[in-house]
Amino acid sequence: MKPTKPLGSFEFVALMATLMSAVAFSIDSMLPAFPVIMRQMTPDAPNHVQLIVTLFMLGMGAGTLFVGPLSDTLGRKTVMIGCSAIYSIGALMAWRADSLELLLLGRFIQGIGAAGPRVVAIAMVRDLYSGRDMARVVSFIMMFFTIVPAIAPMIGNEMIQLFGWRALFLIFVTFSTISATWLFFRQPETLAVENRRALRPAVLLAGIKEIVTNRIVMLTIIAQGFAFGCMFSTISTIQPIFEVRFNAADTFPYWFFSVAMTAGAASFLNARIVGRVGMRAVVVSVVSLQFTISLIMAVTNGFNIMPEALAFPAQIIWTMSIFAMLGLCMGNLNALALEPLGHLAGLGASVAGCIATVMAVLLSLPIGQSFNGTNIPLTIGTTLYTGAVLLIMATLPKRN
Image (cartoon, rainbow, N blue to C red; front, side):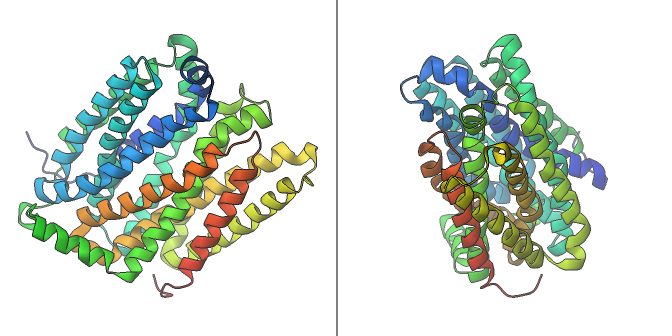
């Protein structure tokens, strides 16, 4: 029996957050497994273990190009449930992998499946909301969503201790199955049949052309890519920084919990203020502060003038500021990019997600692979990427 009654706002936010949490859970719960996977599968090239995260993100970026148009044609729920199946197949492949190459292939396929909740959930929100209301709802979703990455390393660490790192992939399958079942039985389809678009090359290309020729949309997507680049770079290197630079591998999951919860608090704050302040103003203010903090970290660490007694507290505070920036900015950047694309919500979310995600992966690769036992590559990268966001935002109209 198909559900027809619209969900209450609380359950809708909780469902969308749960669906999207598959992405964060698949990334952050793997971080405590890096040392043991490195020893077992890539002892001669320790930085290659970061590809477990990077290939997942790359698969997600590639998948986002297709799931949005498919959801515009087939409906949001059908595509979301199909992506859940692909995600589970990739997780099972990684579970059975006996080499790093097969593990990475499974992670890539898993990432393709994760593109469903990454993109289609946002399209479902856009079907029901627009403008500052959409930014407010996305902020609430992000607030709930950030609880999962906050606790994911602790869950991952416990599972690794009890059952080994491969058990994580079975948890991924269970999590995806539960969220897809919730969606199937409770959430009505948000895209009416009469509003669906035929999946014809000419129609698709016309839609893509409309998106990529919209200056405001493309600049906002590129700004989102640089902001994502900060996040992907941080996630790829945070565990090695804690382990090698600060000898804090054992306590990493608990520190990460504190850091990640900052994003949830920031998302809640954004939901409260964005209606009064405006999306662009929030982004510019927050990124300006982050650029300043990152520049200070880059200079003091790069020139070795950071007092050792302050190094670890400074690292914690700075990492918190990065997650806070994401909590305050990502919902707004999403809403700004999709605001002119209400009639192309699925395709718009796909193109925006694909460009921003692939761009962020490419930006994070040199930082992750240049890890040298310090946080210097990350501080420099974050300074450059937040500076790029500021330059882009300076060219956008001062509305919204």
